Image (cartoon, rainbow, N blue to C red):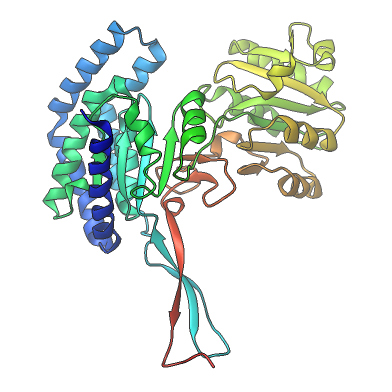
Length: 418
């Protein structure tokens, strides 16, 4: 296969389809999502058969248990994909919304209108359900998309792509509005992230190495986050009952997610009281603790932390613990080691809470709640394309609005500039 020519063809088709989607009304986009849901339901046997082959190939190629779990499709997961499509169809369509309308002295009326980005390239690993998540959000926000899933899921993604194409055709939208790259050749990624004439933004979803490679090589703008070293700071004016529940949930609710707490900071005046209780909770759940000298003076079983631990995203039952003098040291520690994903403070002091959210420079900053809330569903965005720790355009969970831009619109009545 001539990869460059193949990718150019995909890009040209996507750009043409994006123009059709940009003028498509909410009703037809919703109908397309529901038609895709029907096609997925009707095509369960084909999806499961394709996934069975991917799973067999994955075992042969030595995929570990975690990756195999992400790769696997079953009836429950297909039903979840179908429900996700219905949920996106029920979301408010941001396209065409005009805000900030006002009159200028000249008499013209000026505002901002929400518009699609155009063509979105999405690169992801392992999980076939991401194909549906990405397609649904791009369709609802009026964007064409080119999807490049992991090589281990190629047959599953092709089967899902066939259902998407059928659903689009059912309502009269171009099948090329959603295209799945049908090659596992890595050169396809290199082409996708440099096709500035055809692609408007790239969204990588996967491991740190993938995102680092895309960020380094892309000529197309990228929406990304590299890792999630999330912090919880327990202030000396915290409600310790709340602190126990939050620090437990933030770490142990799920380990392998980007909004799990990886570093716990505790004010030194309350550490002797709360750390033994937390250590007991973590011990019951087999969480390995790595801490500073002050934390090890309180709990002897804590392993000595290294400098690397303070910046680590473990994605595992491991937690670093640092005893700090107070909020000043907590904020300084976060500024030095955070990945700017999500940080939380537990405090009953209103002014300290406000100071924390003003000074901590992360995409989500939380007062008296678990870091696990930092995702699209909990923020009311529905499905999300990912979390952005960038500061330009989208930041935090990227839902429908994050896949749009704005343009100025002017309403006049014959005015001319003098």
